[in-house]
Length: 196
Ligand SMILES: Cc1cc2nc3c(=O)[nH]c(=O)nc-3n(C[C@H](O)[C@H](O)[C@H](O)COP(=O)(O)O)c2cc1C
Image 1: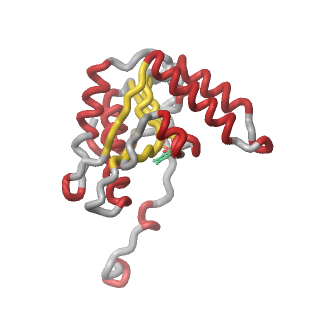
Image 2: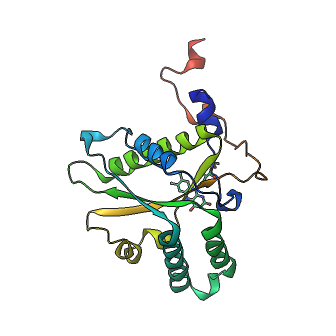
């Protein structure tokens, strides 16, 4: 697969599209090695990943369920969210908690950006396997101090969400994805049109 194909075919693979088949540890390790090649200002390498599998993954999902119950106002509470989190125990192979190690040498946004680029590397690597995929989830409860305490994060570490990793189920249809026109988001200086 060419780089252009990998970029175009990288899609979120949602838990309901995962078969439950385990992703081999070699694939997971290669994916994490690729993450480690993200660019980073001042070489702070701020990405930190906590990999949850098997009963620890289930324990993490139970914590997600409890957090959702405790934190969601009654008027917004949706019981299907709890059912979906429970189903993930069977669908998902691994959950990678995406963390960022804060370093006061550079602005925080640069460390978030570097961590996001590390996630993109993982995502592109999974795309190339044609079999495995992932999805970045950022529920409010995963970003708060209670979740940080559950993960034993240090004061300088921050959770940026969960990356669910799994095997594409045979029935799942590969989404083509949708994007607005790139040219509408880009300005050229000098203006390309005025040059003609
Ligand atoms: C930083 C980030 C956070 C995201 N958080 C969520 C989320 O909480 N829930 C969700 O359904 N999708 C989430 N997504 C996935 C996006 O919905 C998805 O990337 C987008 O719809 C484009 O689809 P694609 O990834 O298949 O191209 C997130 C993606 C990114 C990059």
